[in-house]
Image (cartoon, rainbow, N blue to C red; front, side):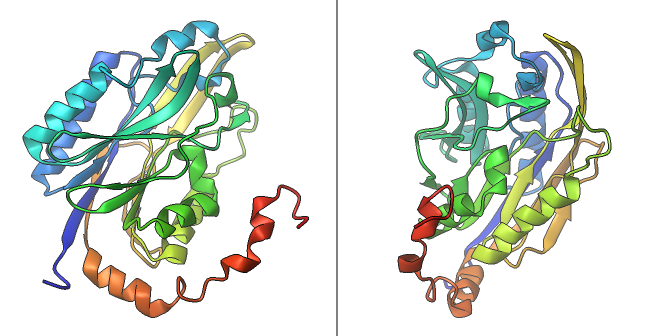
Length: 296
């Protein structure tokens, strides 16, 4: 019946330890708790199996990478998704022969692995030296048809790019999901991006008239680097935004939390169509977006 296709989404937020088993146990515990709150799609934060190792450029950290197929954490989440009947995007450090990616596997509610998205935009700066570890993703922006909704999933730094959100919306994404690891800037204690970070993604939701779910970690993590120790305090603030960019649920900067919100996808679709932003698009005028310097 029109106007009755409802979905409940959840964002998880927790502090990671340096133990894969502990972190995966925590993720499973929180997925189960989200399910008890009625969640149909549950988002776990980026690279949740351990500390955010990209503070350092260390060859030994490549040992954390594993192939997509038969990945133990993905297999466990497939079993959990099937048991609970929930959709779970699973972030992981992917090894593909000699290539490495910051990837997410989308697990449907029957436990089926629907495939991969590989992070497209790879940051490189103090504390966030991902270019040392990750090849630029080659999947392009994708939409996955799950039991409950067509979803677009991108990863952390991707969330700063409106083109990524628009590309997923154009492919029919009804909800956008962004697993994340972001916090303080080791080189500048006075720089706090949390409000900027939220506003940018709220803009993606509002510009495309689709709900958006962002899951970030909390806690202080210190990594031994080639130049001494580096510490990031991750600021949480996981949130769920509605289709006009409004904040529907918001976590704080220090507590483990499970955020839940319900959306009527048919009602939002009617709102999106009536607003006219996809009707009035002019892709014939957007060729400048295919350039780096703005020269046509």
